[in-house]
Length: 154
Image 1 (cartoon, rainbow, N blue to C red):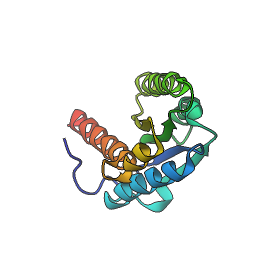
Image 2: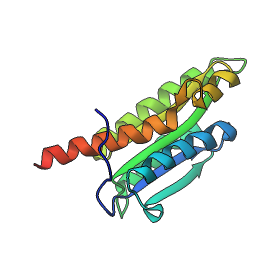
Image 3: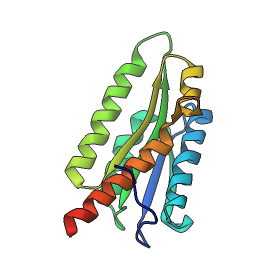
Image 4: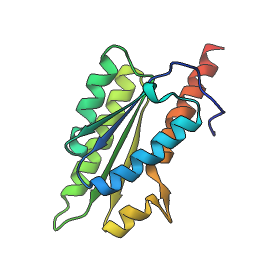
């Protein structure tokens, strides 16, 4: 499924992005924001929040999804790059599970634009390089889910 053109006026989107590996996440944010703007979302309805690291994405998503005004969709972005240990794998699993839990529990689409790579070059390739942009893909997924939700209303 690919999102249709402009979305409804007034839909609120929140992008939450990890400050860790900021050069990668900045490119993810640009990709996600560009997709939302091209879909018709106004700048005032796209909120960007920076969180310390990827591990904090689920708790911030949870607070946002429960708050008022409630966003129509949350786009979580981050980059985990392998270091000397496998900690990045543990964090990746925890973040994915946490974001899924928030989305299912609240009914607010929370998409995961998390780059998990073994090298910085691989991460860069997935943040607007040869392998696409996971931020763009996460924003497109949010729009696709909202489109599907629109079909439920009909």
